[in-house]
Length: 366
Image (cartoon, rainbow, N blue to C red):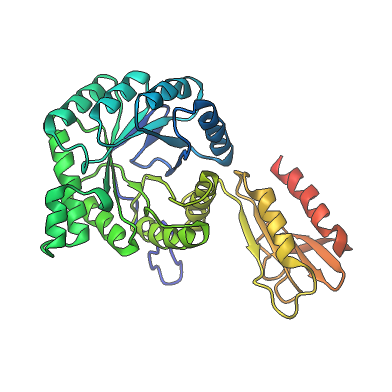
C-alpha cells in the first residue's frame, strides 16, 4: 500500500484477498507477487519458432506464457513445447472442447476457456473433470467480443450494461464450475473499452474471491495500446485488484512484458524493475539527450533489478532533482557529468558520456 505520509491519503487500496491457485511451480492469488504473462503470436504447430519466442519472453522476465490451440497440429506442437519450455504453458481454447481435453492430456499447466463459445454444460463438465483429475486450473476468460448469445441480445436491446453483461457471464460460469466442485479458477473480464473493463473487474471482485487475470484487450499498436493499457490497468491495480497481468498489444510480445513491468514498477507493486528518469528536454539542453536516453533504455530493457537511472539535460534538472537516482548523467556544452545519489563523481567529454555510463551500469547490474 502506498500512502502520502503527510495527508495519510491512501493512493493504492489494500490487495483484494483472493484464493491461491497453483500454476506449475508458481502460485498466484493471496498475497503473492503479481505475475507477468504474455501470449505467443506464432501458430503453436510451429513449435520450434514458438519455443524460440518463449525463450525471448523468458529472458525479458515473462513468468507465464499462453499459446493458442486451434487444431490437432497445434496439439502436436503443444506436446513438444511443454517438454522443452521452462515457463508454465497455458492453452488458449475456443469452440472445440476436445482440444481442451487433449491439452490437459499433453500436460498443459493451465487452460483458458471462453464461456461465450463453449456453452454446452456437458462439454464444460468434461473439461472440468479432466482439469480436476490433473490438477490443472481453468481461467474463465470473459470477452465482450464473444459473450453468450443471450447476453449479446440483452446488450443490443439496451436491457443491460456492458459491465453487467460481463459480470453475469463470469458469475454464471463460476457458479457452474462450483456446482461441479471445482474452484481451481482464475477469472478475466476484458473489453477494449477502458472504463467498462475497470467496472467489470470491480463488480466481480465484490462477488467472488477468485484470482484475477487483468488486462485491457485489443488496445491497438504499441503507442496507442500502451496508453490505453496503462490507464486501465493502473486503475484496476489501484483498487487492489489483480493477481496476474497481461498487457495486450499489436506488437512484439516482448514489449508486453516490458510494459507490464513498467506499470507494476510505477505503482510500486514490483521491486524487480529499473526506473529510468529522463528530462523532457527544452531549449537549455546542450547534449543529444533523446538519443542518450534511448540508448540507456535499451541497456535496461531486460534488467530485473531495482536500479534508478537518471538522464538529465542541464544543471537545472541535474544531480539535485535526481538526487535519489543510484546513478545518472547530466550534460553541458560538450561535456557530461556522472553522478551517484546526487554527488558528482566524474566529468567527461560529451562523446564519452554514454560509454562511461554503460560501464558503470554494467558493474552495478552484475
